[in-house]
Length: 368
Image 1 (cartoon, rainbow, N blue to C red):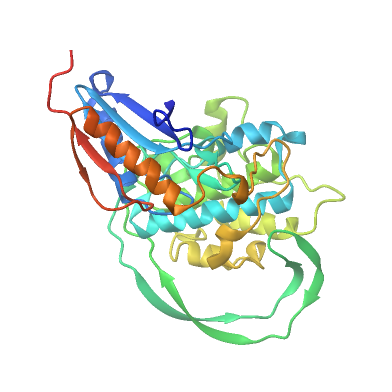
Image 2 (image 1 turned 180 degrees about the vertical axis):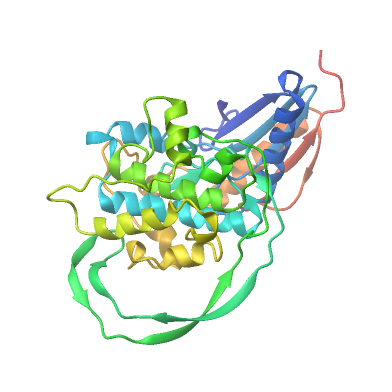
């Protein structure tokens, strides 16, 4: 991975992922191609933009967003006890939930959720990265009507903070839900980070979309407790703990933050060993969003929420960002096109700049 910028223009930084195809096994080459195909489809604020794919000789280069804030794992290591406050954990969990919802709507099962793969943009928001372990499945989006009970007793959240308890009168409401979850997804490949592996993935009997919701539960647990829930003395010990019939355990502090009860309840529902009973496996993020842990979040406005005050988190205001206007963005986009033209390359500009537009660059001349 390389940090690069356009020559004679400092207003746009990019990350360039270079893959040497001659060094890859057929399996890893397939993973690399899968990642490129998925990146080509993405158009989401919490996922990377593929600006260009460059194939030269035995190299494949992917030009994507650069995130100067590092990754969430490094940020956690800077916190007391390697853990975040409840409000900060809710912020990052909510944005990752929206990113997973989008991927599942495309039929993509991610399979590699962990803090190391959550990058931090210069404005403090997240970008999920690394899609080489994904696999695709069919998905049929539907609208489903369901009744929800508006009765609520417990902590009432603002955007990502928690206020005093209040209660509402019970009221039933019929809502139409958009559901797009790859419930028929199936794979037997054992891939991922061992502390985040779901029980069905370890068993080798096959797994589906449920592995992402299990990993999401582990992810929230690590944000709040500074470690993963089934961590053992060794890799084998961790895998045994995950595959056992023992449920997740929590350390309950005497003066814990308000809202931790809801957090533990969500984690318990996500870390159900049986994927058929696991929260999210049937109706996806639609059900997860309704959990009391996320009360108060206006999901259509989530991109506008202010990132939390976290030690070590780079958080620049929009007014301070170098590339702010569409005019400037078009400027560096045109410079990128000129750079490719000057190399004598053949490329196709698919359309004007947007979050999913990129050059396809193929150099037919032999590189010595």
